[in-house]
Image (cartoon, rainbow, N blue to C red; front, top):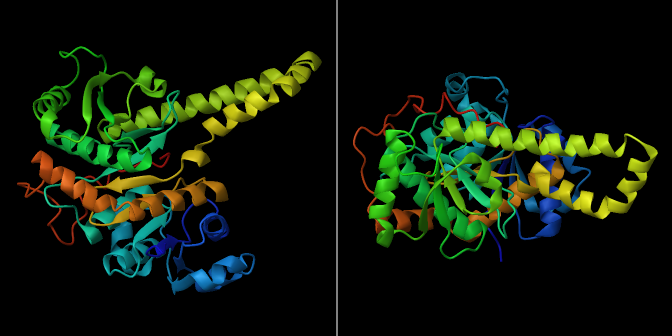
Length: 367
């Protein structure tokens, strides 16, 4: 089945064109129905394509004269959006020239450009950044928000829960995922007023929701598989994500040092290598790469800035699945069914020409 083509910001990420094109080529070798709009420096893209003949007939190049730097403020990037590879990739989605956009570039700039160009769905005032995290359970965990909004009220958290559950049903194929709110304890009296209010609203609306609300969850239980979707504000979510990633690297490095500490340890490594390779695969962030901005009128996926070609290919695969399963319409339907869609008072998403309030704080580069 043919899919709408995917706009690739070829200039984003730590290594830029080479890895982005190599990743897209790898994704196409796995699924030959993928087609691409490659946005960036035309000469550099053409040079990179020389190594990937399978991309030539499936790709079109859109030259972009400028690039968004990793440390550029969203407000600065917005002023140049129409001339940058990131802005032009998002604009292609807005114009219908591409079905979705993928970028490994500056997260805050991507968030600001996407929100200003694509706008949020009716009733959604703040999009959320969602990603898949590995667990001990049978499926991955969807977690949001991971840094797009540093402060959230109860309504934001409830909408995140609805959007995250819709994403989870596509990403994990679970018909009724379990959603929990990240908190400092599982008791109903714990947490901020916003978290407690969100929990109360989710319990009251349980019959109208396409998921099961499981109450609160603490950060040390994220990897246990006791929740399918975990909802929090972007400040707490980004800290939790970085802590999980740091713990994974710590375990990997600790095992590496332990196995190299003596001859007996090296022999032990050879015996246990199948198990350690499985662990390495499970903890490799490239195998879970591709964070999705939920709540926009279009699909925009953030690839990790340090992702390798395999990671970029996984981000492309995530993007394709969102298109294939029509994520946008699913979220709209769930919002309407729950009563949380429709107009929002004092929403910032209709203020043309201004930086979205949540964009300046967006910093989920680890997502």
